Length: 406
Image 1 (cartoon, rainbow, N blue to C red):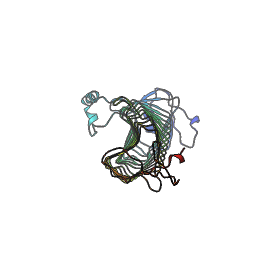
Image 2 (image 1 turned 90 degrees about the horizontal axis):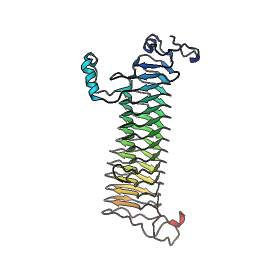
Image 3 (image 1 turned 90 degrees about the vertical axis):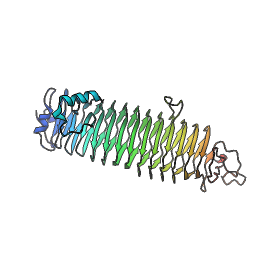
C-alpha cells in the first residue's frame, strides 16, 4: 500500500485494494499526498491532514449509526470518485447506540444528525461523488471554501447543511429526493450555486436563511414545495433559473432586501396535493423591501407574481406574466413600482387589495384585456386601467396601447 505526492501521476501509484485499511494509509501519509482507493466497501474514516483521496472504480464508503462515512478534520482535503452511503434519522437507534456506547457520548453533541460527511475544516472539495440516504449528506459548521462539483446528493433528509460558512460553491450537481432540504444554507455568505438540477425535494430545494452575497444562477429547480427560498437574506442574485411544478417557485420572505431576481423562468408552478391547481411563480412576502424583479417569465401558475404583507420599495419591471390565474397579485403593501411589464391572457391580469403602489412611470404596463383607446397615438392608453380588488389607493395605472404590442 503506497501513497504518493502531487508530483507523480495517479496512474503510477499502487492502489489500496478492497479489504485494505484506508485509515492506515491516511495516518501514514504526508501533507499533500494522493491516496488512490480501488473498488470495494470501506467504513468510517477520518482525514486529519491535507490529502487527496481518489476513488478508482467507484469504491463505497459506508457510515454507521453516529459514525459518519467521512470526518474531515483538516483544511485542504479533496475527495474524488466515491459512493458514500449515510444513515437516516432513527431516534430509537441513536438512543440505543449511546446507551450501549456511553463513552462515545462523552464530550459529544448528542443533537448532531447522522451525517455521511462531517466537515470540521475548510477548503474541502468533493468531486464526481454520490452521497445517499443520510440524515445530512454533508454537514458543515463555520467552514470556508467548500466545493461540491459534478456530484449527486440523493435521498437524504438534507442534502447539504452549512451554518456560519463562507465561500460555498455548488456546481453541476444533481440534488434529488431529499425529504426536507436539498441545500440548507444558514447565516453564510459568498455562496455560488450554479448549473444544478434540484428535483423532488419534498420541502425546499434551496433555502438561504440569513445569508448574503449569494449567486444562484442557471439551476433547474422542480417538484419541490418551495423551489428557492430567501428567508431574511439580502444582497443576493437569483438569475436565469428554471422553476417548475413547485408550490412556490421563488419565495422571498421575512425582511429579505436588496436582492436582484432577474431573467428566471417560472412555469407551471401548480400542484394538487394541498389545494388543487395552487402554485406561485414568484412571491415577495413579509416586509421584503428594495428588491429588483426584472425580466422574469411567469406562465401557467396560479399567481404568476405576487407581493404581499408589508413589502415596500420593490421594483417590478419588464416581466412577462401570461396564462396564469392572476398575472400579478398585490396585497397589503405600499410604495412598490410596477411598470413596463406584459400581463397577457391571465384570468385576471392584475389584482390589488389594501395597497398603495405606483403602476406607471413614463412607461406603464401592457394588459391584454385593456379596452381603452389612444387617441393621440403616444403609446399610452387615455383611460387608466381599472384594477380589480378592494380598498386600494394606488396611483392609477395607465396602460400601454395594445396596438403597439401586437
